[in-house]
Image (cartoon, rainbow over all chains, first blue to last red; front, side, top):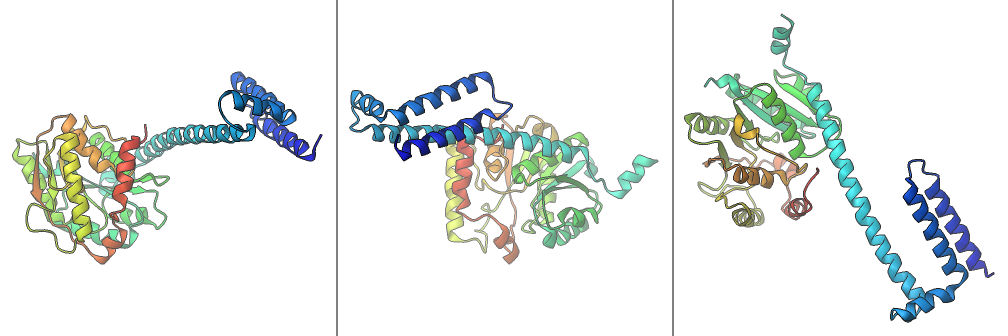
Length: 116
Length: 228
């Protein structure tokens, strides 16, 4: 086994671990993470597989195919993160506005009126 | 309708430096107005300055944007049984006298909202040519998207009948809320009238105000649809 393969396998294991330690991860995502891990492991150990697949769909080299798909994957990831951040901003907005509305600082005259 | 039901909503973000003058001028003009300052997560003591005046102060724990601050202030004023709600800027550009003009127009009846415009009389002095062109394009875009014939789409001074505002949905946290308010006026088929107001372009407000490049951001915010 060449050194690059060992490095890539170690990196894959680190990524898989980072994924699986998340306690909130749902089962489907755990299964998908495992499948992705084994698929990438296959590509690392047998690089010829990616070249064969690449040739079937009309791409010259396996490494190019992996390159294209990783770009697509990253793009989807950015969209997913962006959507999640939009939802988070919405939640923070609701919370902040609720906090502001619950704690109004009224002018003194009105406070006095309230105390009477 | 008595003056006591007029609520002036002022969003403020890091305006401690100018807010004192703005509030002094506003309260000197008409002490019967209920004023709501929405401190939008400022870090310069804006809320402290506001609290030294007889006004209502609401504080967002984090900075959300002018649209969100207006929405908070409007919701609060509606809860306090406001009859007329005015939106006003905190940077000293607007004149309190113009509030009176807009409020009187709403009080006369026949309209739901009075909108301030910088372009009904002679062109405003101190406004850059680029800004004028950008605003001209904005009026065209507003006409195309909402059908409203407005001469000034991004004027922050407006006076609403409170019941008209109850139907409003403001989702744009940042600056695109100005376009959103116009869309809501069109969607709710409100009767509106534009009235001339004077905007004072001081060095302070120019430095704090919107760069025309922000119009690109506003379009992007509208395109992506705000916070849900």
